[in-house]
Amino acid sequence: MPVAASESVTVFCPKDGKFSFFNSPYPSHRLFTGLDLYPACDFGEVAPSPVRGKVTKVRRVRCPRGRNFQDSGFDFVTLLQSLENSERTIKVLHVDPVVECGEVVEPGNDLGHLLRSGYFSFWTEPHLHVEVRSPSDPLRVRGGFPFYRLMEVNERAPLKELRGRVTKSRPEYALVALKEASVQGVTADIKGSGGLLDGGIPHYGWVGIHMEKPPGRSDLVKLCGKPIATIKAVHGNMCLAECTNFDFRVGGVPVGLSLYLFPGNSRPELKLVPYNPGALKLEESEEVSLNIC
Image 1: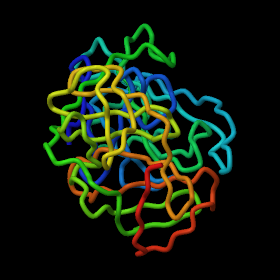
Image 2 (image 1 turned 180 degrees about the vertical axis):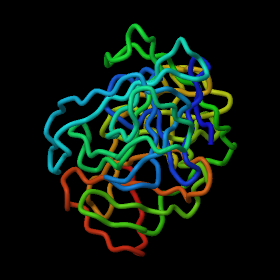
Image 3 (image 1 turned 60 degrees about the vertical axis):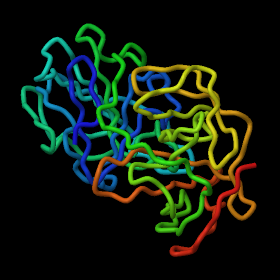
């Protein structure tokens, strides 16, 4: 499904996957220039290409060691010349390519094996990081072109509570199917209108807001009636908001939330992140409620 575009380059996400513009601590995700795609695959499995392009460069790169997890020991940068805009390069991270320079890929074609990069946190799931770049500046951390969201957001009333049933429980994280969530994600309140949340809160310090008619700067973002962020930047149909001082707790245990957008066939789930692996002890099928403190 087409979910984002930049410089006439379209990025696709599997309908049974999820995606995020803001759920990362790295600069491109604060500048609207980075997009993470989470196919329904595990580490080591082959991910589909999210773009139309011709492979121009594959570079194996060093990365930091993983904290509290065993990383792959390396990462890859794959560069592709866009077939939609030949003057733009597409940069893809976190896959060990099964394609070679000169090969052409279409969305859904095999691209590479998903890596557990040392750039990840211990709770990070397998994903591809995508940027649209100038061919003269394809590799820097900064410098990509901003994305626009293509997937339409359905207006839905903001959530009144964060309550649901645990669908997966691991030492690194737990997944919760919320009882009243939108089919596209978790909905907050911005001046009486619903906006989809996208990001890692409060641990990254900011959160993305998706609305068809974005609000103005300095507007307050509320979740279940509690203020959680203030909007600082608006780009197209997306906003970036700076988190206020708050915590989430489950049974007295502090957690962070990872929030994504869901394009189609998967049921949205809330990801609970403990601050240390194993600190959150939940049973699958258990019903839980989150408190905002």
